[in-house]
Image 1 (cartoon, rainbow, N blue to C red):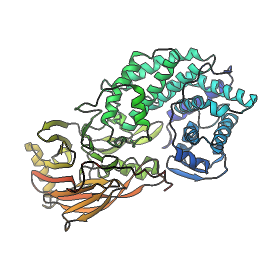
Image 2: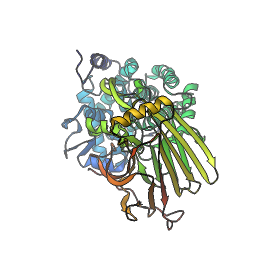
Image 3: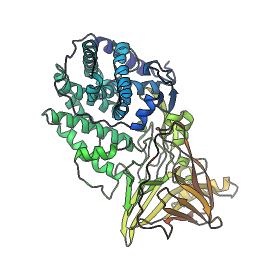
Image 4: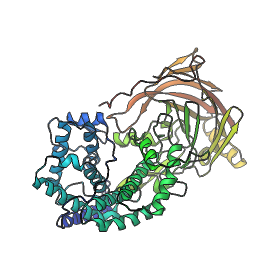
Amino acid sequence: MASEKESWSARKTRWMNRAHARGASLSRPATAFTSTPEPRTIGVFARGRQITGGNFLFAGYLVQAPSTNIWELPMPDGVFEAELHGCTWLDDLAAVGDVHATKRAQEWTHDWVHRYGSGKGAGWTPDLTGRRLIRWINHAILLLNGQDKQVSEAYFRSLAAQTIFLSRRWRAATPGLPRFEALTGLVYAGLALSGMDRHVGTAMRALARECRSEIDSDGGLSTRNPEELLEVFTLLNWAAAALQDAGRMPGEEHLAAIHAIAPVLRSLRHSDGSLARFHGGGRGLEGRLDRALATAGVRSAPGHGLSMGFARIAHGRTSIVVDAAPPPRPEASGNAHASTLAFELTSGRRPLIVNCGSGATFGKNWRRAGRATPSHSTLGIEGYSSSRLGVAGVVSGHKTELLVDAPNDVRFERIEVEGGTRLVVGHNGYLASHGLTHVRTMHIGFEGRELRGEDVLLAIEPAEKRRFDMVYDKSKFEGVAFSIRFHLHPDVDAEVDLNGSAVSMALKSGEIWIFRPRGSVQMTLDSSVYLEKSRLSPRATKQIVLSGQAMEYATRVSWSLAKAQDTPMAVRDYSNEDELQLE
């Protein structure tokens, strides 16, 4: 019997990885670089300063251990350990670049060779090896500067062993982002290391196949995770640039995938430069989206239709992104959320309406809560999500809950009307349980100053009305309880105003927005949380909640979100974001 944490298949894969890693460590080493790709990875200066100060924040865990070797830290979780072995922290130390950061980068990298270079440790998986190789090659000058011959030879010997391991085990990586990481690392190493160029052709052909199988014709992923799409796009850019620098032409499918993904990411980009946070994805690393789009050189503008199932409207300084398609199919839903018809809104550089986000780094309970409909800015029926978490599946060797009973009919219509744009979206996620269809209409003016919305619960067909009547009778004629939630970003200062008939929200830019409901609902300003993996714990924030009872076959609730009249059309927003906080 496989354990609950790791399946038999995962244990077999781990054993095979270890066997091939030990075999690769005995292979003929590379002796030098034939070419070195220009470093393209971006680190975060604030995170680099934290690391040099002994504050290690990875996978939602903070380990404070000044003057401690990174490989001697207590490992609170397997994901924490995996992030260390991926060596992305090298990007952050390189961003600092002073003598202390350089010393730690060198010592910890060369100590990895000493401790794990023979095939030991948790770092010998295809995706982590690819991720690590990219960083070791990108930062080779920093890592080898001032080092003696023995250290340099051990470094090249380890690079060669990891390259050979990847050439044998990339197929064992999970399709999608992990396999793209493995293959990009193999391209990098094959181009950069002497005697390893024989692996480049294989990696190029495999990348082309992955692009064909994992990226659809519209440039989306089956997981519908915006941040995962950005990571795949970034890897494809890096691989293409490395190949072109070496005088090779990337495959047609490779280049076609880059051209298809770019406009999708532009559609998922808020006005502050961050990604919309849906289906397990976060905002994205600071600057990565803009740099990836600039590097790709693809000028295609976002379309007016759906992009990976999301609709975007941008007028004035305001951007809105709406989840307007069915959730990922069950086999791709291991990290997906019940977020159908949820939206996010950003004004200039300031997020206003958000979804709670992924709680994966804060434990199982937070992860499960973050996936439910009440954690999103949409309508939910009390006690139900628009998709339910059900049958367990396996993602990356670990069991997880998949989305079941998901909406299979999600409608979307975009209409350019006089004075603005109107979206009409709807889903049947509550049809089987309550006989109800949720329809959401949103209209925003061309100036981006006002968003008018309406949420409707409808029982349309006779069978649906009979189902609703059964639920209504069972409730003892109290109706179907529902809530419409609007989660606010933690930087928004909100308070109930106008004798309880409105909520005023002040942004750090100085803008004031006013929310007003219309209909038979009760409005409250309740507590909420903002979940982002760069933080140690969930951040407290607030949410506007409209609560009501569906008593008839058609229940309508209207609401508006508008800038206060004295808020100017444009503001000078020079306030800098705070550095990473250990909280």
